[in-house]
Image (tube, rainbow, N blue to C red; front, side, top):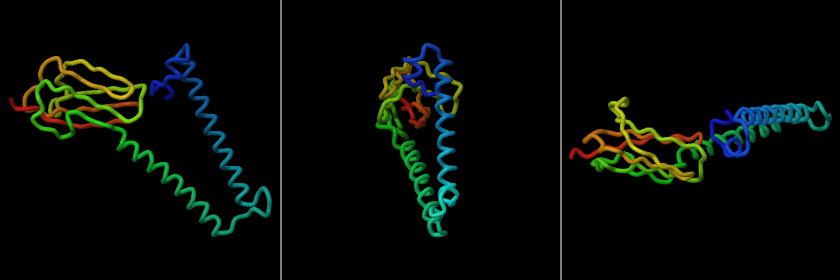
Length: 175
């Protein structure tokens, strides 16, 4: 999993991809074990297992559980917000019609990403190739077709950057 995002740590600092993967797995396992130990200790303390004076009342447990639920909801909400708002601009815009047959597709995003990709297909015939070239930076990606798009066709574009993904469509001009 560590290498799936193409992080600069594993790409620039590690002499072997396997070593980068091993370090990443070890760090994730350690963080998981440390957090589990902290939760067990907190549970013992709240239950009064460590010091008799720290036992929570029913109301105290309700507040504790409410705070934990609020924290998890906030983290989940932030992730959902990021998944919907990571794109800065799209050209042609989603749902555009009468797009020129030689239009360049460009997507820029907020922030920077080390790994990215783009797939461009005809929505009704995904196996029909659309030849062209791509250009990318940390902040966006673009596609320029080698030959004109087929007229009057809906084109579906899927962009991936890091662990985020976004799909949009546009329809080419009928000529």
